[in-house]
Length: 312
Image (tube, rainbow, N blue to C red; front, side, top):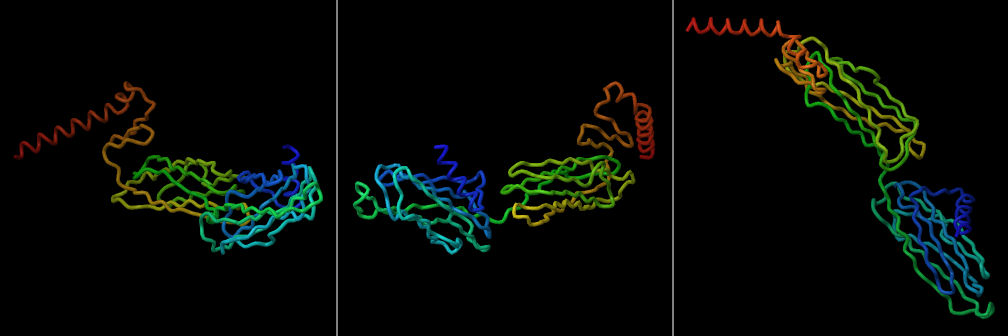
């Protein structure tokens, strides 16, 4: 079994083709104890080339001749470069194999397509007398996918207000392929600033391995008189598995509005008028810090109410 696998790997290396971990295997035993192993990719990106490897092992006690494996494409989305491997005679315990190369059209129909493999051999009875030719069809499924893209998601508050901090989260995922030389830029509008980094770099982002980035948006202490939306842009540049440089971006608009008398922040803090109560301050301290100001405000409001009642 180990020798069998090493032989397949050797075929792939010699042909200049290495399958990814997503390769699938078809194994069948034919008449005369002929074992056929087919390695093919689980999926192929439209516009890319791929290869199918064939390995044939004679485990019978009689020789075979005219051993042949041919592959035909029934789909216009898959084009064949070479389609047949063959050997004139294969003795007991002998083996051979090779790779068949294919390409997918850039405008391929997305979905599963099938290659039609036709295996045939002639058994030599007592290693001398040819028997009727044996043939068998094997369907080889190939899933064609669209060009790979990076998924870019953001998690932000529904609205922000002056003189406060807010989290701005970015999630990046490459669903189909490993990507390299990744740069992430967060571009903020002039109304706010970013605490910490605005640019991040990654040498590699693995397939289906999300990358999370959290930044803090700091709003200007100057009050705003009316609410309006401000745009943030996230730009991701990277090199895909084919070596092509690509860029994807997303624009997010946040509502900047005036601050109300009481505002709870995302970290559990509290804005009360012009005072900020940190979430880590004890209850006794919270009461003590703004006590004088709150008392003055309370007396001032009572006086206003009494004056309004007297006027009535």
